[in-house]
Image (cartoon, rainbow, N blue to C red; front, side, top):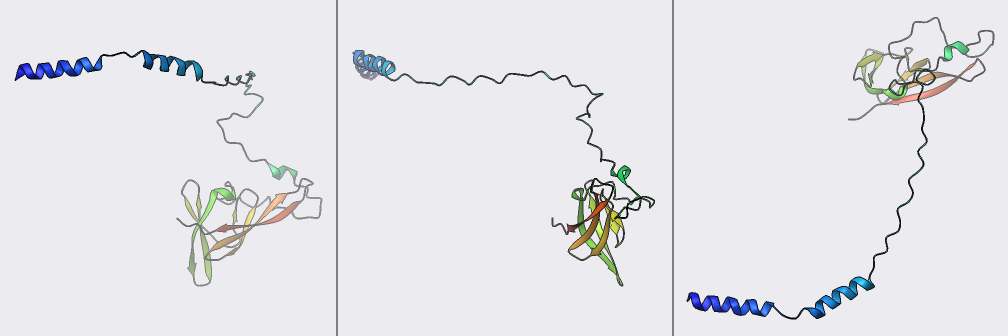
Length: 171
């Protein structure tokens, strides 16, 4: 039985050996005719060296400071001006984009808005209180939004009123 299986395997192995010249010819002609055309790589841009001088420019690791527009107040003009003598509110260091309305509280006829900062702190504010960087005063509170009037400097010493709204944010 072993002898028969050995003979069968030799017979199969002899069938695998043969003339492969036609296969080799096909491979060489195919490689010669079909040459891949790869476009050249684009030239890299020229690097321009930049010397960063910290004493002349703002550090890229410190957030930009708010422009001090209070210095451009001209009290001699008869136009809208912010009250610079009033004490700043606790949310006047945040831009309105960094504040979110989270809800309202109501007791009798008083209604307060719950405003959340980007750090996660929640504050209760009522009508007439201030928030935002530009002297934003709350004019109206509804269960769905808070209406704010901001004072934006116009560059000539006067200030223009700009209405803004904080919408109730969903989760």
